[in-house]
Length: 369
Image (cartoon, rainbow, N blue to C red; front, side, top):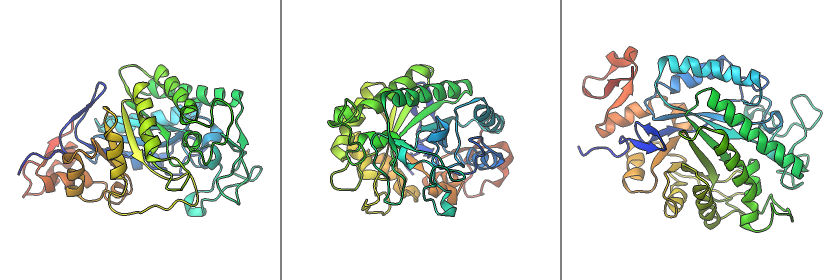
């Protein structure tokens, strides 16, 4: 069997990834006052034994009001940093897998119920709710309370919040920061003409709409150690006429690259309730390919990638440099093991798991520690 391209290493800044499989950030809605709990230790701990190359912590708010829900993780004070540090220390005791964190501000999509409680907005003043902010006073949904439009002092506070969270991440020894500019959250709201109706230097043209996301990137890059990578997650299209387009995503990706981004993670949608997404296996891979066509840094594809041969083809065909797994690896936390077995590759495994190696895959495992 020819060597699997999915299981070849990749250098990102000074970090060597063991293979091309990364675990995407997935919100757990299980924090208390922004602090990680035992759930996160259990959940992230098992994924750190998966054999993937990188584990990404869920959308992590840089300010309390930037949380998507009252159950979201934060990294904005000593308590949230201590709680995250406790989880990371436990993971690192048992796994050598590099760890990333996704820094986020939810903007107008903040202050929501947990998904299993309906996921709708909790109005300001109600338990678990608070006022929201956005580029413009445009609500995400008809039954949402409209956000307040950010003034320059508010922009500075958010920018400073991202930088402070990056410094906290550095103190925790986190290997990579991913800046969340996708899925309809604040930085995506600035990029999309459907959410950004500003008439100042932060609205109108694409250069203006990209100004604040780039300022946030620059603040994070300056606050994070220069030997560690900073990536950006974008929604490459809003899937709505008049919204953010693939062509604009290509231009913005090049802007981020010019500012020093180390990778672009390509997703889509999340900004507008009228989005019409053609969901199917690998439905976002063409978007990743479109971005890869215009940048020189690694590109990550994500979205209904469930089969090892499909993931292999994405890398081998040059559609992307990495594949990210989300719901797929929630369903099967040992997916990288099974992919390595199917593709004749090798995957790291903890010593405690070595004796479960199937007899027909005699070279599947190598000791992680």
